[in-house]
Amino acid sequence: MKHYYLIGALTLLAQTQGPAQHKLSTNGQSLEGTWVSHVALPGGEPVLASVGTFYPGGGYTGANTNPTHTTHHGAWLRVGDRKFALTSTFFTRDEKGVFNGIVKTRIYITLSEDQNSYEASVERVVMDTEGKELQVISGIRGRSVRMEIELQRSPISE
Image 1: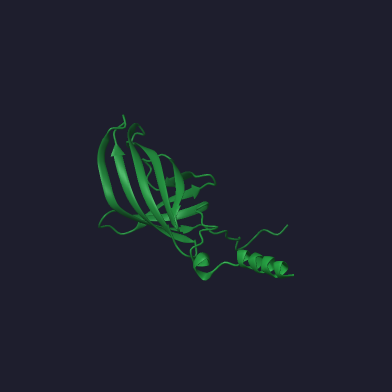
Image 2: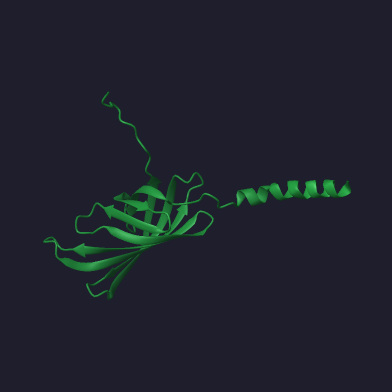
């Protein structure tokens, strides 16, 4: 009979999380989804910069408001509790549409507790058409919000 009580007590303890374990849980933390981002260059004010999608498995695509930039492609990874790293690359063109450079971004992301926004620290690496590094711009700040589903204000009735 004592064994049944002992087994029952151990089973109950194994299923119960302590307060510290629950607070530090990273279950469910993900960037998956589409985000609207505002970015501020060093010393500048935030401006609408891009819309990007984080995919399951670590892929990323995005587009920004600059017509001389191609679509951004990249990879992301969770690196800690509400912490993520993203590296993306895009090509630049001149005003005639001729390829003239490569830009790589290294981004460190801190997801908000409600998981609907994040703050980012961005480093931009500017390269020539051969991939030779020309300039590194640090101190870029970003803030993004998760895109939400919106219903039509005046849906067409069927």
